[in-house]
Every structure is written in C-alpha cells, then in structure tokens.
Length: 492
Image (spheres, rainbow, N blue to C red):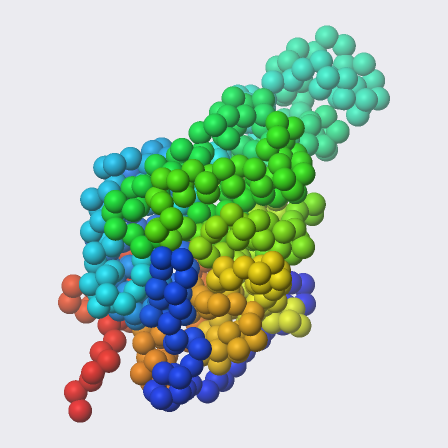
C-alpha cells in the first residue's frame, strides 16, 4: 500500500478506559432509535470482507464463526461484508443474487442474534461491481487482445517520423511489443491502461450494451437482493455506494455519461436514487435501509467533501435511515499490479486514506476522517433532517469514540480493524475492563491478506493457541481464523 512520503511512525497512544459506571453513563453505550431500528448502543462493526464463503458465494462454517465471534462482543450493529447482488462467479465472496442463498444467510442471522443474546442488530451490505481482469503479459495483450487500426498506424508513423509502408496489423502489433517507448504515443489512454494495469469496465463504457443498460437492470437487482435479505431475517440493508464499485462510480464526478445518468450532480444522483426507491418500495417503510458513501474520493477530478455533502443531503431527503461515511479506495490511483495480478483499489493514495496506517504524515492515522463525517452530518442537520451518520476510520479507544459523539461529529461510531483485533472490545469496555482490550496497531496486516484475497485474520491473535482443540485454521494451516475466546466471568 502507498504511504505518505513523510512516513512518520505514529505510536498507538495510551488511553484511559472508563469504569463500568462511567461506561453506562456514556454516549457511546447509550441507545439510539432511528427509522425502524433500535440499537442498544452506538457501537458498530462495519463491513469487512473475510474471504470465507464458498467459491459459489454460499455461507460456510467459517463465515458463521467469523460473524459469531463479532457477535460475542455484543455491538449495537454488525454489517455483513459486501455481498454480491448478481448470481455470477466472484470468488469466496458472499452472494445474494438467487433464492438458493437465503437458507445460509438465514442461519447466519440466527447465529448472530443468538451469540449476542439478541442485542446486536445485523445488516447486510449489498454491492454491484463491474468486470476487472488481471494485468496481461505484453505478449498476450498485443497478440490476442489488441487490434491495430489505421489511426494507430498514423500515430506510429508520427512517433517514428517516417512512413511505415505496408506493415500488416500483425507486424504493427509485433513492433509495439518490442518497442515500449512508443506505447504512450500510439495507444489510446484506455488501451495503455489495459496494458499496464489490466482491463477494467467503467460506467462510462456506453459502447458496451450491458454497461449502457445498467440503469435498466440495477434497481431491480438491488431490490430483489434486499427482498432476500429481508426474508433471511436481516435487520436492515446497507447499499454499497462507496469506493471503487458501480454505484460510487455513478456518483463520482468522473462519471461523464451522456444518457441522463452522468455529468451533472442531478444526473449522477439519478441511478443511486432510483436504486434506493426500488429497494424502498420492495422492503417497505418499516425496514431499515441506508447506505455507505464516500465523503472524499481523493482522486483527481473526483468528488470532494462539498460534493459529498450535497449527495448526503439528497439521500437524507429521499428517506434513507442512515448514512455511513468512508473515504477513498478507488481504482483510479491504485498501484500497478504485477503481471498476472488484478488491480486492487486500496493500494494508492485514495486507498491509504480509506485505511490509514501508523506510517503517516504529520496528521497521523487516528480519527483522520472524522472531520468529513462531521461536515456531512452538519450539512444534513442544516436541512432540518436527523438522519444518523456513522463515522469510522482509525478509531481504537473509548476516549476517541466518546469525543466524536460529544462533538456532534457523528451519531454512531464504527471500528473495523480494532474490532477485528479484539471482537470483545465493546463488551470489555462496557464492563469496565478496558485494560484487557487488545488494541489494533494499524500495520494493515489484515489488509495485506485482503489484497491477495486470502482469509483475513489479525496478527495479534492468529498464531495464538494454534493447537487449541477445535480451532479453525486457514487453508495453509498456519493461522487461526477467529480470535481466541474471552470469558467475561472468569473463575474467582
């Protein structure tokens, strides 16, 4: 992953944990009701992809263990990983694009409700994504995928400053294969990207019928997926409108579609609102429905916080029950992958801002994005709306979470990596045992595994008690897949 050039190592700061009485009087551990949902506290585990489903997207025992372990900590809410709304191959990522996925998801809901003693609300994040191919070897690109045209030949002649004569298409391709210094002058920007990074579909690809027709199909796909989530017993749905994926791409200023679904803010909002309206009509007003969105894309020509505020206001006006705020995580500035690997949207500057590490600039990684959530919440409140805002990003202490709420920067405080480091940390803190919390070091060990689509674990516990009876291990047998159990009532 990219890190700021200053590369200052910031220590995880000491913190004061509350007593049990202090925790019981705190904002973070106070209830919140919004729309049809009631949280017993304002703690929230946002969506994380653990790569534990089957290759067909079905719930496995490892999936159940993963979410059951978070449920042990009894947070106010857990959001299940980005779950594909299409019934298409997508690796070990959960899917909900067909009724056959409902039984496994139903079992997951029941498990979380049971393991949390009925305290944790379980939502599911619904996602659509476009095709991304691995970076091809140059030989494969020029000999199999690329087709030179007369325009390419003219550019080659201009680059060389001479007539290329009667070179055939094959000969032009072979020449470019062995002369990378002229690629930038001959290939289009899109072709150069496909060569250097790998083929990737884009919402602006109106020449592709299935991309052009996305507005026709996505509202129903999302609505059908949400109906299945409702049938499975989930307490709500979070529409994935963030990061590098389809819906965020429609919202982005980089969306230049000319069919009424791009360009202006109104055009860029059109499909996300149509998706929301289709889902709302399907699940009804008594079902929780919100979204995850970006407060800043952190890319050239992308949305900034002012754009995000306008988008969030429109979502709140439309009736979304909550807005969860994130930042960055785009393909546009991602690190070039190795040949044979696919580009990963969390490896560039925008990806860093999504998951900042202890190696940072002078601002440091902790609570780095809270000001963005505060701006969005303030913008919504100025319209007289009380839609709850969920803040996240580098939060690993009660003190920080409580201050966020005291400052009015958010209504709910979420923590992903810290919850992975210690799934019991909410419960430990609530019981006045914060000194037992295993605190995240923000080295992004977990994110490095995610980058390679390996089963995600935490370095703070995945080598602990590997010989423990019944412990589930990674496919290579070297790491445990869930954190060791914590006993809130140890023997005296």
